[in-house]
Length: 101
Image 1 (cartoon, rainbow, N blue to C red):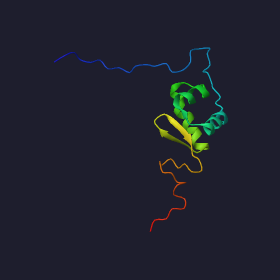
Image 2 (cartoon, one colour):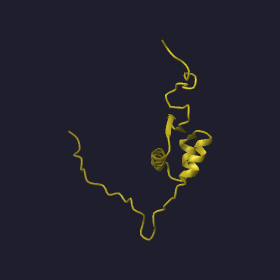
Image 3 (cartoon, one colour):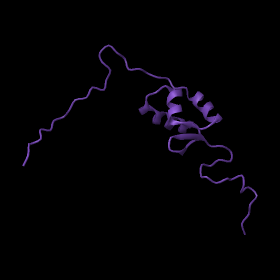
Image 4 (tube, rainbow, N blue to C red):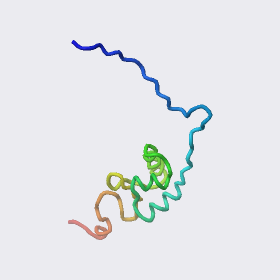
């Protein structure tokens, strides 16, 4: 019927080699916040500003959203909530004095 598969547990080395310490990066969340106040940031821009690897950007975004009102406008684009921006696509300022009877 075919060859018998010989399954075994593979070993992976995730730790840094002997003598090397893993590189730690200190992220400047205030800088990211100030940049987000100016304009929305893309995933790549956050990666460049923070200096982390691709896999660490989602952790940066999660941490940012815990401290600041950040939401994802569309895939890979992040923005701060504004006074009239609820992230729901509705222009709330236009509805301010609008009543529906």
